[in-house]
Structures are given as C-alpha cells and as structure tokens.
Image (cartoon, rainbow, N blue to C red; front, side, top):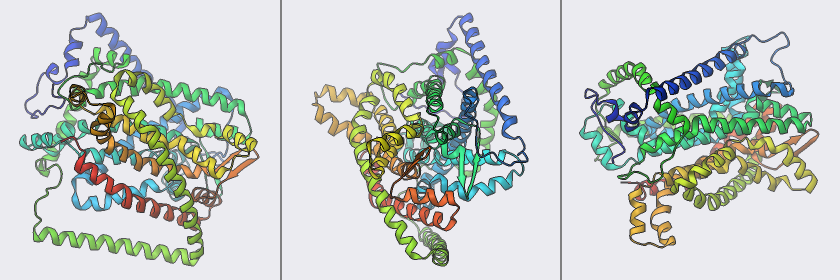
Length: 596
C-alpha cells in the first residue's frame, strides 16, 4: 500500500480512509474505548497538573541574596529536581522543533538563503553552549528583571543550542532528497505550500526527524550540568535540577548522592521511552515509503490505548480551524514549488544572485575586520595563534572519534534499523544509553583516571565519545529503517551474498544518513570538548590541552576576549571541515544515493 496520500483540502475523506487504525478503533467494544478514554484523560490531567505545580517556582522573584550558586543534595529533592529538568528539556525541544521547521524549510526551499543558512548552521553547531551562555545570560536577566525566569530562560536556551542543529540538518536533508514521484504528485495536485508541508515534507522527514529528536534530548541531557549550574563571568547561577544536583554532589565528593542521581536518571529515561519515544516510533512506521507492509510491525501499549480512545478525533476537531486559517494565509504565497528549479536562470536572476553574494561577502568582511581589530587591541594575534594550535589538537581528537565511531556503529545501526525484531529489543537499550547523561559518570571516570594514571589528553576522547557517538548510530538506524521492504525482498530473490547486499543496498541507503550523523557527531564532539577536556571531582581536576579547555577556562574566569577567540577558532575549523570534507560527500549522496 502507498504510505503517503495526497488529498485536496476541500475533499475531506472519512476517518477510516485517512487512517486505518481509526477504523480499527471504531470496531472496539464500548467498554474498551471508554477505559482508553479514561486512561488518556487521566494522563493529560496529570501532565497539566505537574506543569501547574512547577510553573510558580519558575517565575518566583529573586531573593535578597541573589540567584543561588548551590543546590541542596538532599535525596528527598531528587524527584522534584528530575521533574524540573524534564520540563526544561521538553520546552527546549518544542522550540527546537519550531526552529527546525522554519530554518530547515528556508534552507531547502530558497536557493539564495541556502548559501547563507547552511554555512551559518555549521557555525551555530560549532559554538559551544558556554559561548552562547556568556553572550546571552545578561540579556535574559534584563528581559526578566528580578525573577528566576531570566535564569530559567538562559538554561532552556542553552539546552536548545544543544538540540536544534542536528534536527535542522536532518530536516533540510530530507527536504532536498524527496522522491521525485512524490514531488511531481504534489505539483500535479497544485498543493499550497502549507498543504505540501504537512502532506509531503513532514511525513517524508518524520522517521529521521524523530530519531534526531531522541538524539537531541540525549544531547540535552549531556549538557544538563552546564546548563543548570551556569558558571560565567566569575558568577555561578544554580537552578534546581538533576544536573546541578550531580555537579553539587561532585563538588562535595558525595558518591552516594551521585549514584542515586544516576538511578533516578535511568528511571526517567525509561519512563520517557515507554510514554513517548516508543509510541512515536511505532506511529511513524506509517510514513515509510514502501509498497508492502512490514511483516513485523512495531507496537506500543501506549499507542494502542491512544488509538482506542477518542483523543485523535478531539485533537483534529480542535486544530482543524487553526490549520484551515494557516492554509488560507499561505495561499497568497502560491502553489507548491518544491526545490528550486534547475532551469537556466534569467539575466535578472543572475544579477540578483550577484548583488546578494556581494552583500553577504561585504557583511562577512566587515564582521571579520571588526573581530580582528578587537583581538589585536585586547589580546594580540599571538593569543589567536595559540588558540589555533589548541584547536588543531582538539580537531585530531574529533577526527579520530568520528572515524572509530563510524566503523563501530554503522554496521550495528544498519542491522538494528533493518530488523524490526532486533529494533524492538534494542531500541529501549539504545535510547537509554544515548539519553543517559554520560557526564554524570565523569566523577567516577576522573577517579579512575587518577588511580590508573590515565593521561587526560587521551582519556578526553573517551569522554567526548560517550556523549556524541549516538548521533551516528541514531541517524544510521533511521536511514536503515527507511529502506523499502520491496528492495530488501529483491535482494533475497536475487540471492545476493552478504557482502553484495551491503555493497549494493545497505551502505548506499544509509550513506546520506551517515553523513548527517557524522556532521552532527563532529559538531557535538567539538561542543563536548568543553566538558571533556577539563573534568573535576572534589579536589581532583584534570585538564587536557585543547580548545575546549581553553574556552571553558576563559568563560569561567570572565575573559570575554579569550572566549571570543576560542569560539571563533572553533567555528572556523568546523566550517572548514564541513566545506572541504562533509559537503562534497553530501552532494554525492543527494546525487547518487537518494530514493528516487
């Protein structure tokens, strides 16, 4: 059966035609549907009740002593701290998703903007969260004076900066690699841009976007300590949360409290997997492009209960007027155009391209000149050279990490994504490993490094890998799960050997996903260097030679110029690697290995 359907807005099919699961739920006994409605309603009420309980504390006024610099390590506070951290995580994820839809669509659909937005995305993902925090913490405090909401907003923004970039990369790639026949179908039906977005663009990107949402949450957990215990400009702002709890326990050398925090974190991750990720991955299977249904379908008890209830009908009834409104507002923008046309450009278009390029280059040149003047005046170019040398050291760590993780996780991810039985068993395990904030174990690793005399210059590679290797694994799983069953059955019909199957189907199919994972893993590794090249536990502090430690020390001491130098060098190196290495591979993937 065809997994994507195109319907004109005015032709409203019945519920069973839109979704076979709806027809199945209509056949359920009344008692079953009533019980499902009760469970869903109870869950929604519990969710809103927890949010209402948290909100007053988020906006409470700052006391006379100012923003606290420490949090309690009382074990009774752990559940509340975990709830506060989860709230921040998913508020940041919501804004990351909105950013992804807007930014990714602009980067994929507008030819001129893509020349700026895609390189800018490279730069944004290379800026560490400490760089964002040092530049924005004052702004947030001014926007919300006298209220803890300013620090909360800074923390959520820091988590956002660790989540949004890989989602935007994934969505942009999905838009630029849509199957030709579906693109032509959207054009033939003359869908408005709003209709096309929700009928083709989002469904086509759903599976990789969902896996990247999981990875974004995992990345957010990894930087949770830095975003809840904010140390910038010789000040420390501590917010109630499980990340700040671990940081405080490590400072007090309280291993028991850290162990209880790890147990709490595992329970939180498992609960999120059961209530959110497992239902979403099972639901997203309907967006696979295939002509035959998978023999082994992903299942979820939570999704089954939701489908048996009336919640989907209520949500559709509530949001249909809003959707119709946006569709009406989008109609003046014209009918769908998909990707920009490859036709010969007119003289006017070429002239506009030249003007646009000149303006962008002029803006970049002006910014670069101003930056060099600041560096020359306040630090000198010798400091810039030292930062560049440290950047090359960190670059070697990132390159080695990306290579080793690719060799390990590409075959494992492909096997998980192509086998529904293995995926059903391994998905919770992978999500726990990826979502668990590995920096919670850094105090134990630091003690091990000290006891075994492990050089932190090599040990930091392991610490960086703990938080960034999952970008490659999750993207490869998503790419492998999108391989149509028809192609898998064809390889079996032709009796291809294992190596031929990998060479002719699996590796080409996951090549583009591996590139997306590699780009985001490398960017994540650069970010992770700020918490991996300098680690501490109590009186023990280990510092590696590298750009991450340089930026962390400059940010904590409030040395703005050094922070700017470190962030600039990191951005230049990341963009250079992406332009020279990853982008040619990405173009090759779009040209040769897309499903068209």
